Length: 300
Image 1 (cartoon, rainbow, N blue to C red):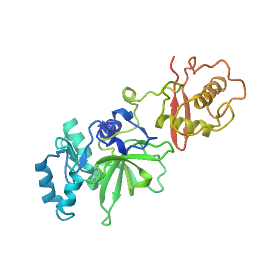
Image 2: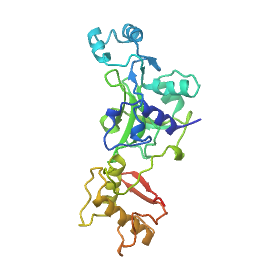
Image 3: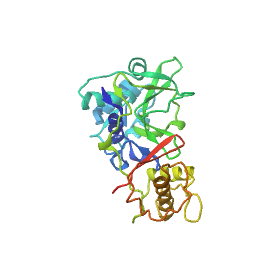
C-alpha cells in the first residue's frame, strides 16, 4: 500500500506550472511543482517524446483523429528528451518506475478493481480527499478518463492533477470546470489521510519584504473574513493573497482571541494588546471556510 499524497506530490512535479491557479493550495509547494513537465500521448506510459516515438504514436494512435499537420503543430514545442503519458498512465508510470510495481491498466479498470467508496460525484456526502481519483464516464458506461484530487483553490474548489490530452499535457484543473462524473478512493493501492509532515509546506503569516503572497495567504484571508476578523479599520480583508499590515492585524486578533477564549470561532471581546506576531502562542488554531480546513501553529 502506498500513501496517496506521495503519488499526488510526484504527479504535481510533472504538471505544467502555468496551469496551476494563482490561488491554489496544493499537496506540494508551488516552487516544487512542474519541475519536469510531461506531455500527453494516448496509450502511453512514460514514453520518451523523441521524433521516432512521435512518428509511431501518430501512425498507431492519432492518424484517424487528425492530420499530420495538426499533430505536428501540437507537438512542435515538445522537449524531444522529455516524456509523455496518458491519463491512467500517469499512475502506472509512478507505480512502475518509482515503486517497481509494473502496471498498465486503463481508467475503467482502475474504477472497477482498485476503488472503494465510489460513485457519482454529484450528491456525494463525503469531502473529496487528496489523492482520490475522479473519473469521466463515457456513453457506454465505462470510465474513459481519470485524474486525482491534488488540493484546492482559495474558494474551496477541489483541484485535479490530470494528463488531460495532447493539446494540454499534465496539468492542474478546477474540478468545477471539467466534466468528471464519478469518484473513488483507490483503497486497493492507497492509504488516505495520513500526515505527511516532512513534505508539508510551512507558511509564516507575518509581514515581510517583499510582501508574501500566494494561495495559502488568500485561503487564510478568506478564513479570517469568514470567522469575523477585520483589519484595524474594521473592514473585511481583500482576499488577494497578499499578506500586508491589514491581514497581519486581523491574524493577530485571531491569535489573541484563541489565547484568551480557547476558540477561533469568532473575535474576542477583550483587548488584543500583548500579542506580538503570535510569538508566545503555541496551541494550534483551526478554521474551516468553504469546506477548507486551515490549521495554524505559531513558531517560537
